[in-house]
Image 1 (tube, rainbow, N blue to C red):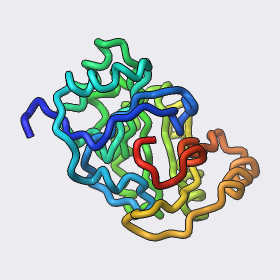
Image 2 (image 1 turned 45 degrees about the vertical axis):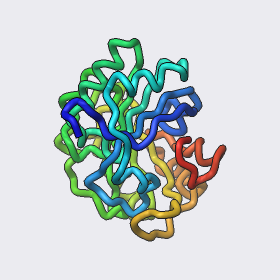
Image 3 (image 1 turned 180 degrees about the horizontal axis):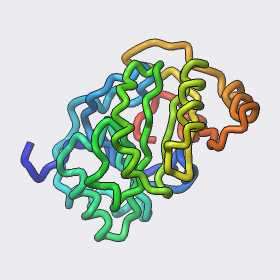
Length: 224
């Protein structure tokens, strides 16, 4: 792969299915590659392969979508050295850029030029290495932190982090894990209603997140 290229799994136009911007039309750029293997991963197909594209080609692909919001996701988009350059180029074109990251790689190079959605890995993911802690100082109030809750133990673990008040963002998201076909592990998941009731019972200052795209188009469709 040339230094100036990105390895891209897919680019598509859809509604944002998560975060506080749920329901807003977005351009999605899914980059290839991830160094984690979470049990509940719903994008296993982005671990390898993909298409080599120049940044100019990526921008040309999303222009017909006629949107102003772009999400760069993966895999783990910060594994690719050209990701900050892509974000800068998108900014010059007038796009509002969000980046979804697992938080195990430094977000410092993009902290001031993108809206960060940091997915702090819970124990049931089998990938909760704690690297997110080094990124907390770089988060802005306008960024978002997400916890995927796959068990009661996950809920307690995430609740304790929230109550410790170490997270500086205005938005903290709790999402009930739903098993996806092809995930590299097995777990029973939790019921979304149970999670909602626990949030209310414990008076947590978080947003319950549902995956709108899966409600609308199903759990195993790519490019949604």
